[in-house]
Image 1 (cartoon, rainbow, N blue to C red):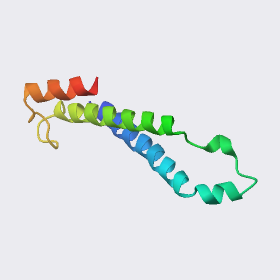
Image 2 (cartoon, rainbow, N blue to C red):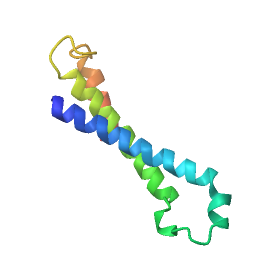
Image 3 (tube, rainbow, N blue to C red):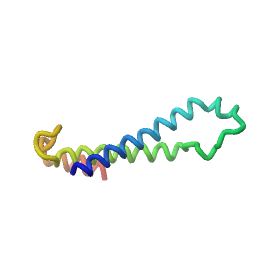
Image 4 (cartoon, one colour):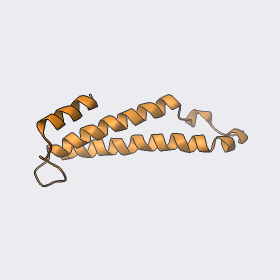
Length: 93
C-alpha cells in the first residue's frame, strides 16, 4: 500500500506540473512568438493539459483509497465508511 500510495502521489504531482507548464507557456506566448529559435515541439497542447488534469484527479482519488487501506493511525486510514470508499472508487473509474 505504501508503494501504491507513493506512486499515485508522484503521478499527481507530475501531472499537475504538466498543467502548470501549460499555463506558464500560455502566459509567455508573446515572448515565444518573438524568438525565431524556439522549438515548437516542446509545446503542450490543450488536449495534453486536459488529459494530465484528469489523470491527476483520478490518481488523487485512488491515493485517497490507498491511504484508507493503510494501517490505522496514518492520516485518515480506516476512517472512511464503505459507501465513501465505493463512491470514491466509482468516481475514480
